[in-house]
Amino acid sequence: MESNQKEKQEQEAPTGRHSLESKPDGPRAERLPGAHLRLKLGASLNVRLMCVNMKYEAKVVGVEQYGYIIIQLRLPQDTLTRLTQNNQVIVQVIVDGIAYGFRSQVVNRITRPAPLLFLAFPDTVERLVLRSDERVTVSLPAHIHGKYGDHDVMIVDMTNSGCRITAKTDLKDPLREIRPGDEVLMSTLLGQGEKFMAPLVTRRVDSQHGMLFVGGQFRDLDNDKARLVAEYVQRIASYTSSLA
Image (cartoon, rainbow, N blue to C red):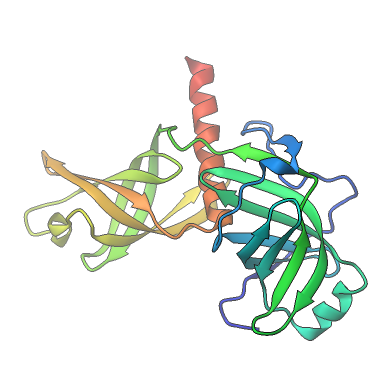
């Protein structure tokens, strides 16, 4: 299996489990006809194969509306053998800030010119809108690493797509040279101590009274990371509104 192939061991899902999990304090999933599913070629999605109870990351390479979905996914031979005995899958994908989840079946597969699986187009989907305009105020310790060195910073606000950080600097601090368009690697803990790490592309830089403020946009978030951020933002927003 290729080195960049991601697979996760998960607990067996009981019969009737939803494709998308909604937490009590987070956004709710709604069940809709399959016609509401929107997919983009090249989109990354998570596929859980029920035959081995594992999650894999795949890529959408073709869609025939109401017919089938073609994904590129390389699997070991023993998994392919089990797939012939149980072709059930659960799929999750995020498109334009909307998370979709659905159950399907592998109806065909080919190995040339690439390892492809054909999934039946779902009759129903679960949709979870991840609001991209929600901005919440936080005080979240974080760490950044890049060409300006390693720095402990504080995240002061966050959205689904980015955040604003602040750091105390002096005239000799190399971080004062950071400019819009630069990229740093940021890490922090979200929610129940869940580690979050992602590239942050700087969009705005301000400084005042010895404090540096940097606004940035997350880059290359996979489905799991995007969901982690969205649920954290929604949780903070829900708590803040309850205090208003």
